[in-house]
Each structure stands twice: as structure tokens, then as C-alpha cells.
Length: 346
Ligand code: 6MZ
Image (cartoon, rainbow, N blue to C red; front, side, top):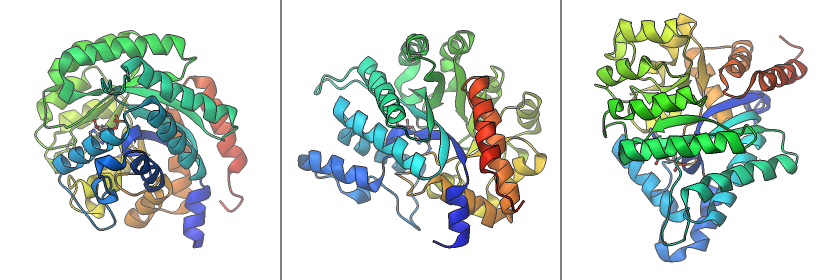
């Protein structure tokens, strides 16, 4: 590993946009495939390797394959613990995982068990002494429609009260070309009024202007991607003004956007637009397993693409602390950790 790699691995980091089933590593996939050889699933069906690209549609097909491999409580426990361990090994000190509760008739998995199991994994990692603080966002998959969205919010509300602060919010995700955000407004409003934080995938693809305008009125607490919000990408100044006025941080995932072909090349990534505005942005992985990346690589990529110094990258990782959904005391603990780990050289 060269010095740059070491710096980014050792840099304490905050990960705020990580879909559980998209974050499953090659090694964990191997274990899942061995558990279910009859499915005949190969690595090329669950990950997009170096230099490869897919359409966003094809990416969503990959998740369907992964879901076949992860369909029991036992699988979810293993996957969650492995993912948390890998983020910790990569220098992530605070992680917000997100996942869509699923029920599987074949295995008897229920949505309640699904969330329960992820919480169990978080608790086990904590008791094993891993140096990472983990929270959970319950995800609404927009393909499943408004009724399921409302059920998901109700489930998240129950867990918010019973999970000792581990369930902190709601994510709206899934294929952005399916459905319209207006159908999810009642569920999202309920979540917000009930004290759940909102992270919404917004303008991940073009022509979602009207939807973004509507959802920004909530307003959400964070935005996933926001690729087409700003005027240079076909968005509008009024959308940008809303984001800036409400100080809504953006979760940005470079490799994911390149491999999913919503952004043509790294240098054209919208990170530059928001960073130059001085608006809060948080570098994230999205789906580290599917896109074959990790958070250190994403930080290094941002630095090399946009010519940012190690000092500037340190600041970026530190500023992410203000964007987390956990309570103020956790922010203070993280800030102290960053202070203690701050290199002498700058
Ligand atoms: C929108 C995405 C996504 O929930 O089963 N997901 N939604 N845009 C993306 N950009 C690439 N990447 C992942 O994790 C997989 C699910 O996360 C959402 C999709 O709904 C996908 O099925 P979980 O843990």
C-alpha cells in the first residue's frame, strides 16, 4: 500500500449511505453461494468489476440476485456482521446502514425479524468491541408502492422506540424510474412528525424535477445522490436554493454513479458543484459490494479527481459528523475522536 492509500485507510470516516445488501463483499458472497449452491449464482452476477459499467436497470437486477442469496435470518445476521466489520476495518467510526425489510414465505422470514436481526448484529458487533458506532435507517423501496411505504414507517416507529436509539430514520430508495414521489408523501410526513429522520434518494436520474421539488418541501434531512438537481445537469436554481436554504447535506457516491452510468466521468461528478458552493456533502459508498469499492477508495478518488489536499479531505470527513442522524452526544464523542486522531502534520 502506498502512503496515499495508508492515509485514506487510517483517516477516520463517517459512512451515511450504505445499502446493506449492496454492501456484501466478495468474501461474504462466497459464503452465501456455498450455502445455496443450487441457485447457481456466480460473482459476475452480484458485482460490477473494475472498468465495467451497467445501466441503472441492470444494477437493480443485481439486487434481485443478491436477495435470493440473503433470505433467512441466519443470512441477514452474517451479512450484517460482516458488513459492519469490513467498514470498521476500513476506518469507518460511525456507520448508518439502510435496508429494506423483506418477508420470505419460503423461509418464514418476517419484516419484524428482518429488522430485529440487523439490530442483533449491531449489538453483537458492539459487544465484540468493534470501534464503530452503527445506526439503522429502515428503507422504503419505491417499487412496492404507498401502502407498503406506510407499513414500513409504522414498523420503523416501533423500532425507534424499542431499539435503544439504533433505528434513527427512513430511507426512500429503489428504482428511481418507478412510481412518483407524491405517493410517498403521507408516509414520509408521518415519519418526520414521529421523530424519524429522512434521507431521500432525489434526482438520481434526469426528469425527476417535479418530484424533487415536492419532496424538498418536506424538507428531508439528507439527500441521496441529487445528481440532477443543479442547473448544469438539467435541474433548476430553485431546487438548489431550497437545498441550500434548508442546509440539507448531500450523500455522494462517485463510483456508484459512474458504474451505474448516471454520471459520464469522475471529473463531471456533481461533487464539484456542491463543494464549490461550500454546501455540506458527505462521501459515501452506496453499495460497496456491488460496485467493488470501499470508503477509503472513494475519499482517495475525490482527492485525486478534484485535486484536494489531505488536509481538505480530513476536513471533509470531520464535517460529515454534523450530518449524522444520531443524537448530539454521539456527535460530540465523534468530534473528540477526530481531535485525538488528528495528524500533527497539518
Ligand atoms: C436507489 C438503491 C440503489 O435494502 O436490500 N438501492 N436504490 N438507487 C441506488 N443506486 C445504485 N442502490 C441500492 O439493499 C438493496 C436495495 O437498496 C436499494 C434498492 O432498493 C435495492 O434493492 P437492501 O439492503
